[in-house]
Amino acid sequence: MSKIILAKDHGKDVMDMRNAYCETMIEMAEKDDRIVALDADLMSAMGMKPFAKKFPERTLDCGIQEANMIGTACGLSVWGKVPFAHTFAPFCTRRACDQIFMSGAYNKANVKVVGSDPGITAAYNGGTHMPFEDMGIMRGFPGMTVVEPSDIVMLKDLLPQIGEAYGMFYMRLVRKDVRKVYDEGSSFEIGRAARLTEGEDAAIIASGFCVAEALDAVEMLRAEGIRVRLLDMFTWKPLDEEAVLWAAETGAVVTAENHNVINGLGSAVSCLLAKKKPTLVEMVGIQDEFGEVGPVSYLRERFGLTAENTVEAVHRAIARKNA
Amino acid sequence: MLNDTQRKELKRFSKQTQMEIVKMISHIPAGHIGGSLSITDVLSVLYNKQMKIDPENPKWEDRDWLVLSKGHCGPALYAALALKGYFPVEQLATLNAPGTNLPSHADRNRTPGIDMTTGSLGQGASTAAGVAAGMKMDEKENYVYLILGDGELDEGQVWEMALMANTKKLDNLIAFVDYNKLQIDGRTDNDEVCDLGDICGKFEAFGWYAQRVNGHDVDEIDTAIDKAKEHKGSPSVIVLDTVKGNGWSRIANTAGSHSRGVSPEELEEALSEMQAAMDEIQ
Image 1 (spheres, each protein chain N blue to C red):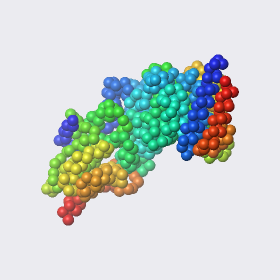
Image 2: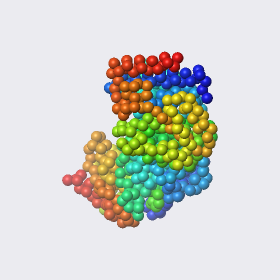
Image 3: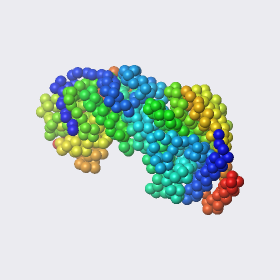
Image 4: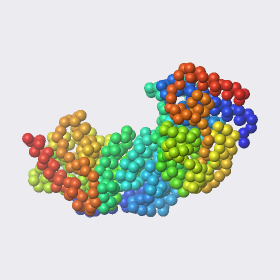
């Protein structure tokens, strides 16, 4: 069962995701000797050296060879281990795409693929390293569960669930700073969106760092007298149909994602609504462009992923609803 | 070392496997016959002599594993598994039929005795290494056998695995290369596609223990596996000199044997040639 405690000071504190990832992986490995960590020469970048030090026999740094890392992880899982395989998001989902598909999903393996630096958070690594398509690629594979935790509290709660559930997972994960959204004690259910605010005028369905931006947007809209429902859609697949339909009750839906709107969260929500309850949708997200280099603050503005962009999208949605 | 009875048994099993392969493929418009026929001898040595298996309990946790990375040669493995009793031989006639448990490419979720799903070339190399690494973590003394095609060595993933498996000292991994010298577009030992050059030398450069033997001589294969098992500290590769389409002279050593059909007349021809070879063993 989910228990959502929205942090009163949400959006204020900034926390490092890596530490939470490594600490939680160590806790999990202490309890479950099937947990194995694989990496492709980014163990230091991911802050996983403490894990490697504590569990050298359960650490496999494969070097810069993502295809072999994913394949090895799949073999380990068929043997009975629970491998978490990390590299930057483009290098698992693009470069090792067929390995995740065939050795993983088709083979019915049990690998937890972790792709870091999603979307614009690749920042100074620039367009080559900036995946706007990773979640969409992974969503297209039968049997994949696809998640994007929005803060550390959620990450810590989801990781053990991911480890315990048999099956292929893709988790995209901001490696460095994320804004706090939830208080300790919150718990989440994979496949169930977190319903964060109530309102009748419109609904925002957000994911990843866009949730913190959306919370800002909700406050800005409230000051204008506009009340919106906000969903943290941290599971992209399976998509929480009930929650999307709840959002659609407002008649004006806005999606917000750090991902290409083509094949992204906006597409997933629109596809569902087209089938179940045709509703107008505005999409905040990457408008089918390549990334570029720069600080996250610049890139957020450059690609239109700010709270202000979300407010504008809500205005557009309400205007269309009332037209 | 094989005694005379064992040698004959292994040769007969290999020939029976070949006969089942041509029969299976005769039921469908086309199948991967050439590369299936070239690996029946190594399958015979593995399933009858070297591997720890229990056909009654295909998932036996103390078994040795086999990963057929050249997954398109599923028909060879299906025939060997059926002859070992993993499932009824009659089922072989369902190869590629709608709803079958015997699809073109090996699928562990459908067929008893298949340890790993394969089909996209190069990938079985890594999944085999993963199983070997898991066995090491659990201090098991079992072996993982990996069968690679020679054309498959074009895939970079094989060499990624070769680098890693040696670094991680996976001496419980024994790979075979079915060096039948032919891939779809031409020869593997000249510049028709990609020249593989000195395969043993390449693996040795990656730190592997490499041997090259006649892939249609069960004694040589058996001895090479024994030596590979004795070798500690790094993985082993056994390059098998083989003939694509082995056992049926009409298609032997032709690239066209990679995938083709078998007409009723051809089936009769192939079976009679194989039966004659079988009679010679007895």
